[in-house]
Image (cartoon, rainbow, N blue to C red):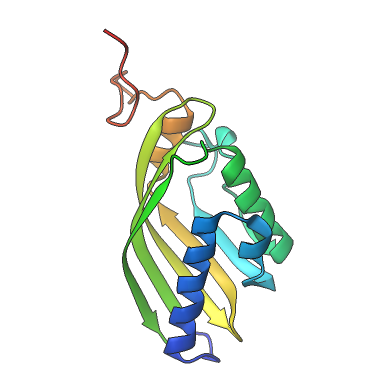
Length: 163
């Protein structure tokens, strides 16, 4: 259990600012909201679901790592073909949970995908010290991998063959 150093209004403000900066897309500017050391994890099965095609998905621990994450994420997606729908931000002391859905297009394959997510943040002294993401890793992997389900059927977001 962490000791709260920020009131809920500060936590919400930092979470909202982080989301705004993510939308703007400047990796260095986004990273300014992270502490020098942070606990950064992405829920992703080890060596499964095409992890090799998604190099930005890995654990991180520094502000520089955060900037590198956002740079790699941008490099692997088609600019201007992304959207994020935030459904809810839940705040309790220095903890925030953001619930929503991302829509992106994988640059290597041109496949669009949607993935629901939960982002768990801990804010201390106005900076992010914990960033844990839980997302639909299978949807992401399909967009970057073969685009087929295990039975060979196209996934719902895979481009359809031309008639």
